[in-house]
Length: 474
Ligand SMILES: *Cc1c(COP(=O)(O)O)cnc(C)c1O
View 1 (cartoon, rainbow, N blue to C red):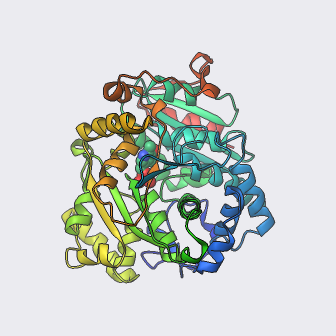
View 2 (view 1 turned 90 degrees about the horizontal axis):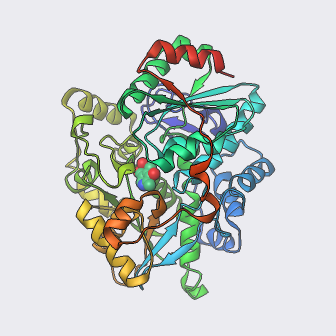
View 3 (view 1 turned 180 degrees about the horizontal axis):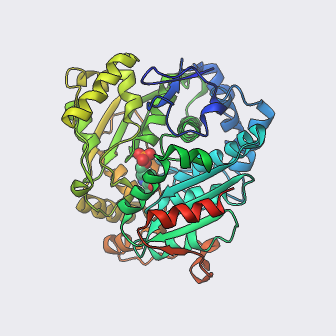
């Protein structure tokens, strides 16, 4: 099983050769040369497996160059009881008789990024040890991704993390979560500026090929193959749990739909890949917030990313993204997996600021199963209020965007599964606004805010950052 680039300019390479790189060598994204197929009998044979066992089965189809016992050990360590609060790792909870939440935020940072990042941490450590290499992750975060990366990579052999965050712009909880880590290989840097400044500093370093090579820089961003493949596992898990109560004779091909709160198009893309492997998924409904570039794309076929100034700061902040870095993988499929047409589309984007696929738009739903919708601040407040009043369940604002859009796309006889992407405890203000409840931290994190914090403050200063990284890189 080999991987190729969407732009056609990379020699086919095995899974573990790609893990350390974000992009393909020609600037495209890596995709499987042919998508492995699973049969209904095969999926059924996985019904009794635990989450780490199921992860081993699914990932073994993608990471064919990693020995199975190694993969099984990585999955056991990634999805351990120590890392995940729920015994089943991913619990399903019905909020009414039609909509069920898929709990992806039981991990150490209370958001779904842990699901992929914990596996990536294990697999990076394995690949580095085998190739006798080291890796220095330089990243920029406004909250969720940085903390998930730090919790997945803390204490790992041969890896160091340099994570920049904007000074004074994260919540108390996010700061405490990252800055309380005491591992020697974790370096938190609070930059004087906003998130974009952190990102520009990161780009300056990673685009300097000489510096990048000299200090073995790498990234764990949302296009990383390890992340998108680990995210496929919970679609299989959710389908299996949703069909546990279906009579055995009716399970083969039993269709369910998913709604996915989306930003960079990583999570829902993993669902699409699971569907193309043969998992019976009827609809993949994309939920956007006010930054609804992707909803616009699925409704019109025109992709017109927006710049930072046109990106609103909303109350579902992890979806405040106006340039969806994983969309290229979907466009590649729409264009018949033709690297020439794909490259032409990206040239059009560079020249005109948009890609016009309106001629293909009718296939997005008919052939690929995609639908979409938008949710606003008022919608998420109302959804959090209503779901709490009906069921006692408290949603986080991103999941609320999902439930709002899911309820607009229900079909008779088709279960709707909404991916819960974060815990409400991370967003107490909107929960209070919607319900009047003041929710506290989960018990196992209650004293986090009192721990001593470790962070280096730095000006918006590239030279200082270079010096900092160069002297501490592994
Ligand atoms: C990252 C994130 C999202 C968006 O996921 P994508 O894979 O970027 O589409 C949604 N909700 C939460 C809470 C997140 O952290």
